[in-house]
Length: 371
Ligand SMILES: Cc1ncc(C[n+]2csc(CCOP(=O)(O)OP(=O)(O)O)c2C)c(N)n1
Ligand SMILES: [Mg+2]
Image (cartoon, rainbow, N blue to C red; front, side, top):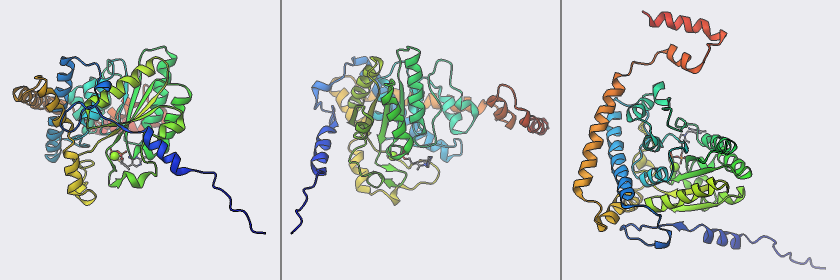
């Protein structure tokens, strides 16, 4: 007797189709700066719109100056940010002062706009411990270098805020590479289970150093990874400041209402190298891809949007550029004036009371440094 052909019980094509419909990209401003989604337009005053533009222009200048300062040997570790301004600054702009930021190494701009003095950002770049000492009124942890580790810490910080009854959220950032790490899944899963007021942002700039996103995961979006954790996920145009703001603001509102975390994937691009430590993007990205993304530039479209409303012009832009250059000059001077760090500094800031097994080494260094 011939065996009956068994009908497949899986229908992956149908599943995949349903997923791709569910995770369409949210866009409010198109590449020309035209509003294409009035219904999703966030509630921002003219002053707020102008302030957001000011921050993006300022941060682009800061990026350019940081790259030259690094080349002159006046800065150390630096991960370029141009191309990611809308993802970084519009998301921070949607927060309140009491909210906590747990950044990755590329997310220094969010710290600055949340309250980290510029000279401390430069000290962080130089590996000086004062760059990691957050001011009292700044709710933030130091930039994380271990990919994805901040996701678990964010679940913990958010749960802590909830347990203390604070009306605040914890937001964290990683890249597409980070979304392929184990810590990413643990973080969103734990936060989901405990309804922790967290916002998990993945800045998908398409590459983890040289590895394209397609090689990191078979999932067609990062946003859909939220489904397995039982939390909402959304993919937004990360070159569109208004879309990023709208998504983060809504995620914040849900979180403070006690409805738990949200995963937000921002589609963006870093124009520069991965870091200033010798990466050459021309070895893994084509000129065509660069051009394609330059046309989506977050500053160009937001500028066009504001100019059409009569809220922005060249004069305003030049004022911001001059201000940024002036501030950077002052901040570098201030960073230069900071005493060089000593080994004993590193030991004494780490411990309230020096552990007995380090006392001897501490004394040896004290002796060396006194010469
Ligand atoms: C756990 C861990 N593995 C590897 C590295 C080395 N590393 C540094 S950056 C990076 C790529 C991260 O890419 P992505 O998360 O997409 O962030 P992007 O740099 O693009 O912003 C890697 C693998 C690391 N820092 N930590
Ligand atoms: Mg990346």
